[in-house]
Image 1 (cartoon, one colour):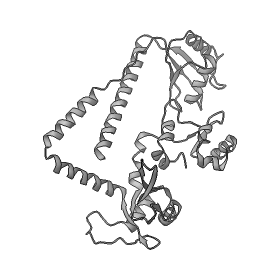
Image 2: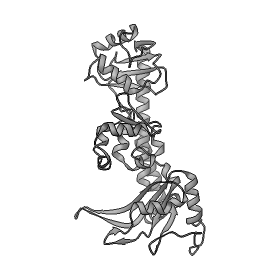
Image 3: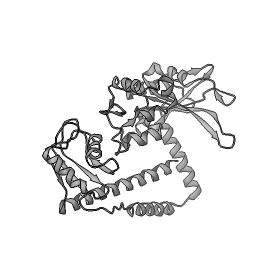
Image 4: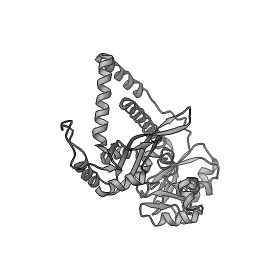
Length: 342
């Protein structure tokens, strides 16, 4: 559950580790054991590792101390829940708490297919430090087929009359649950917000100027890096099963535990690069050992290793800086778009 698409979209802390290129998507079992839900099941890392080995969507690192998804979780998956989620309302409340549990809501919607996640919404009172139920929530299905089946039975079309009823109405106790597709709900929410904004401002030119200014500010974003020569090595003929963690383990073993480096490598590729943050006399020594086979990644030798120099080095850093600049600009655009939807 913790590594599922549905949970990673909600769990900012775990998502940050899984999407960190430095970790290669691996989460240390010791970190997972800090979660109360997991601690209730076991506090033994070996038990957690054994359980992860039985899940085909997960994998362990070589030392069996960290867990990762087989399929990486990427930024474009963050909005995938919209197309398989329902917005539900009129959930019964008593004394500011939900009368029914997530498990009961989960079971209620399971007749349409596999439910990946149920979220019951609350308001947080900062002064009193308590949460209050608001009678609303989300139900996310594991696949589009189950979602479509639920929509066909529980939702009315977007152009239906106000008094039209769905084919089926779900109840919790005596209360009928209102159901909309998340896309319809978001579109209406956005439309209402834009309508209010138009009524308040009434100035299209101001919006255009704002968009132009935002675009100029984003285009002005530049990633800078004070890079130094002789800090990048290129590797050819990497062994099968190699990953970033294996490359960085090699750096720690042959160059030093405290040496900071980044592995520019994608699993399955035959070639890759390692970039060190600072020059180090041991880098050339490391390359020499890789070349003569006295240094290995795991138990496997590489086909060829060399320090990147001259024009090739300049091109490498130019491409890296360009990549990071585009990444920062895209992040700024995403943030701007999220703010517009609020």
